[in-house]
Amino acid sequence: MNALPPLNPETIKFLQAPRRMLIDGAWVNAASGETLDVFNPATEEKIATVPAGGAADIDAAVKAARRAFDDGKWTRMAASERGKLLWKLADLIEANGPRLTEVEVLDNGMALNPAGKLAVPLAAATLRYYAGWPTKITGDVIAPDPRMPGAETLTYTRKEPIGVVGQITPWNYPLGMATMKLAPALAAGCTVVLKPAEQSPLTALILGELVQQAGIPDGVVNIVTGTGEAAGAALTAHPLVDKVAFTGSTEVGRLILKAAAGNLKKVSLELGGKSPFIIMPDADLAKAIPSAVYSSFFLQGQNCMCSSRLFVHKTIFDSVMDGMAKIASGMKIGPGLDPTTNLGPLISSEQLERVQGYVASGRDEGATLVTGGKRLPGKGYFMEPTVFAHANPKMKIVRDEIFGPVTTAQMFDTDDVDAIARLANDTDYGLVGSVWTQNVSVAHKLAARIRAGTVGINHHGPAGNNAPFGGFKQSGWGREFGKEALDLYFETKTVFANL
Ligand code: NAI
Ligand code: MG
Image 1 (cartoon, rainbow, N blue to C red):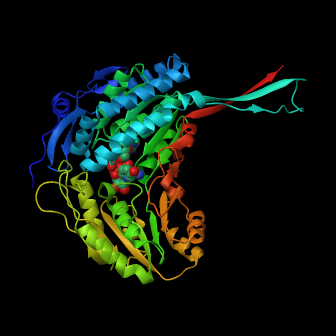
Image 2: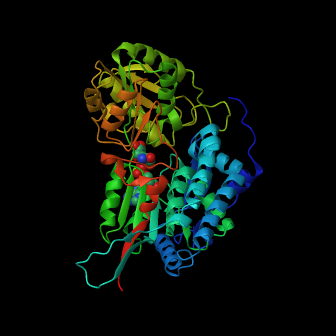
Image 3: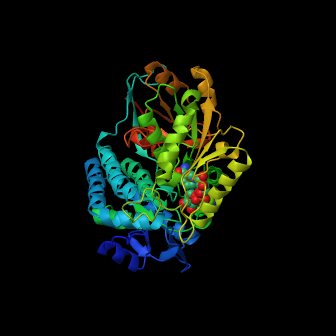
């Protein structure tokens, strides 16, 4: 292994300092005094400890958020001021780019490229997008209904912030997840308790420092570290929380719905996917093949958009498999801090075991292993990018979200768009899909027929932070990004005046 470049002094300083969590503008330990260890998945070494927040800490954070909401200093702040503070937070993210990038790489394992060129700049861009919204939030004036009392009436709607929001984020894209949750909630005027994933909580804590530096008032953003079972569950059950926004597993999504039933919290969920990537016989393979590799192995396949179900027309099936195998087997696997790394480690030994279990199941169920499959010897949770051909919809590797560097390919032999859509839609999920073709008519017909929240034509993944993103079917409830994400954080009030 090459010697890794030295860490930024700011990164070293952050890792050496005791890390506390942010409640009501103060950096505190857990009430219990307990801590959780945080590991670098590339080396298996402990890099930090964070407070193991529990029900008492969540209660303190929720009450702080409640006070900050009810006192009106955030909700009734001039819209342009609220926008200015979000923009300032974006500037601070950029100014702290090197530290955020390195801590993200050490904590999550992702390579320098996705961390420094995507996660950090996109976090700033998302805040800037939502910084423009507070000044543009408007209601409607509604025509009078003559059957209602009063000769002259005025009816209008107000978009009011929903209140205190609990936000629970996963480990796979930590800073990006935290900012895509915080930005629309803050733009709408809500106050927040954010619970980052226990596997990779560190960049959320840096974000907390920057929230304070930006001048966002105390209690508006509270960040509680801790496990899902302790801190997460307490947040979703708390009676003073008005809404929960969650990204993670379908299983925990169901638990959150149950916990939210107590005070009928509003809930939005982003629960992953099993996204189809359809390559038609006329597709530009020079673009489709590298994109299939990238979309399957981005963040080691640990992402909700992963193109884990490839559908490839019979006439080009072998060339696509050969092309993918060539690129995938040439990918450099290593620690994210090595600038030449393409593929970092998986997040944990549990995740590596889980994913290796799927590789074994793919072989057992008779799929053809085209490339990859093996974990790497030595320290770190590394494994090869893996492609299975001749998969079918009965196989576990085709049905389950694997959340690792494993993709599956199925062959089809028809030009009928309805038949192709039936194959693509044979899944419980519906987050993302893509179709690769030069034929405009086929492209748009399939875009209309694929049951997913985002469909790419000669593109796979989100359209940008200004376009709605979220799931059909069991991929979730609600849309993040764009104007629609604001609606997750508003209540609509109708005011009727009998003049
Ligand atoms: P998870 O759903 O358990 O964790 C996500 C977040 O939920 C974390 O912050 C966790 O602390 C919290 N959480 C866990 N249990 C909770 C509870 N009872 N109440 C409230 N919050 C709770 O996901 P996990 O176990 O890390 O990964 C398992 C699988 O879930 C992955 O292999 C993948 O298939 C899927 N997943 C999907 C993600 C997506 O982006 N849609 C992200 C992470 C995981
Ligand atoms: Mg879990």
